Length: 325
Ligand SMILES: [Zn+2]
Image 1 (cartoon, rainbow, N blue to C red):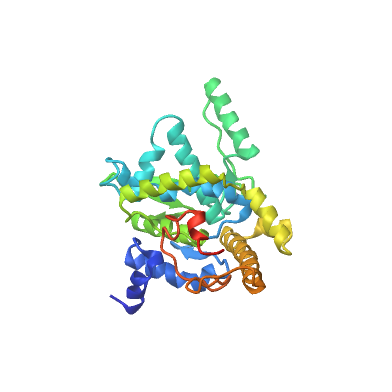
Image 2 (cartoon, rainbow, N blue to C red):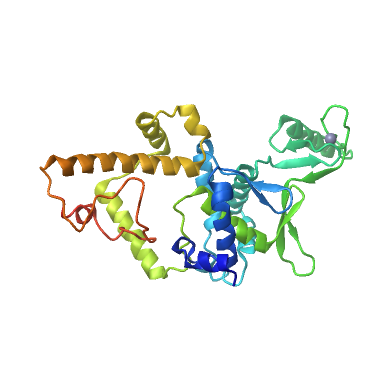
């Protein structure tokens, strides 16, 4: 095992992630994550960080990435990609929902539009565009009149191309009957998709940690505790509220925040919160009215001790502030 790889395994943040993928992501931290640069992926594709503008839809569509195949007896023997494919094939609304989520996710992370691409000039005709809808209407009309379907012609000026490829689709291997993804002409294999899942999660969610290795009973207990804690304290804030908070506490304008990567937005909001708390605690401790326990120094707003996945989760707020009188 290479030295770099060994380091990744020891880094708790990547616990549960296959060592080669952990080491790849770790190398992206300084090269790409720091400046929110797109990461080259599978040939000509690039993985772009999602922005606050796409927050809700990205968060909802990232369910494709966090799907737990091992919770489903049918999923255990499948690869993540095959399991996702099986989800898109469920009849009715559920299958459509998974297809829609995957399509939206790829539009956001690859900066692509779903549709068909002219192989002559590269123009993409989106499925949602009036041009394509009009074409489909023409096809239906021709069918009703018993005529042959009209040819689709590229709308790009002076092109006239009539050959197209789909921007996103699953392709089946005729021998194995397994599926791979084809995105803008690039093949994403099951191994590539496994990399994609982890890269995108770590790229966009700065506090993301894989929990597939955690005992299911602990996971369930944790989720129940968190639910109770939330109900007890009624803690919640919409993303809109968080945007307003960041704008008010800093000199960022709303427009700046909408274009910010989700990664930097999350870090900025946490840091502002930490800074304000730190200032209050520091002022209180210097005032002489508050007795601060010697074994519990005030946590600095920049320098933080490493916390593992469940960190202080098993403490209530009262327990966490105990000793501060
Ligand atoms: Zn064309």
